[in-house]
Length: 152
Ligand code: DQA
Figure 1 (cartoon, rainbow, N blue to C red):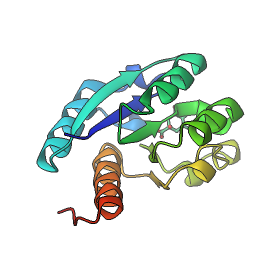
Figure 2: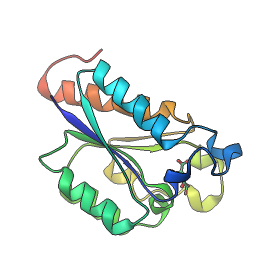
Figure 3: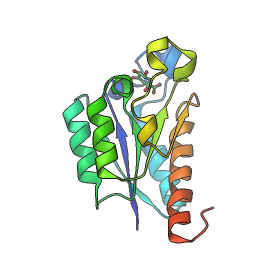
C-alpha cells in the first residue's frame, strides 16, 4: 500500500487554540485523523509528522524518498522564508502538494510569496482542514495517473 507523509511545520501543533479567528478550532489531531480516513478511502495510508524546526522538516523530506509516494506539506511560516526547504523538496523529488488552512494570498503581502510553490505539484489554500483532504485526492489522482490507473 502506498504511504503519504502529512508534514506540518511550525506552530501548527497549536491548532485549535492558535488564532482561531484565522485558523478555526480544528486541532492537528483532528486533521491527522481526517487525513488517515481519506487516505484509507483511496487505498493509501499516512504517516503524520509535525515539527517546529526547519532542519527536522528538511530531514523528513529527505527521509520520505523511497518511503512515501507523496507528501502533503503545510510548512507554516517557513513557506515564506525557507530556500533550504525548497531545495530539499526539489532534491528529494517526491511529489508534494502545498497546503495552507488560510488563504495566504488574501493576507499580509509577506505571505503571498511561497518558496514551496515552485517545487510543488500545486498549492491549496483557504479551505481550512478540507485543504488536506483535497491535497490527498490530488496526490492520489497524480499517483494513479503515473501508474496508468484512475483514482475515485
Ligand atoms: C499557514 C499560513 C502561514 O502564513 C502561517 O505562517 C502559518 C499557517 C496556514 O496554514 O494558513 O503558520 O501555513
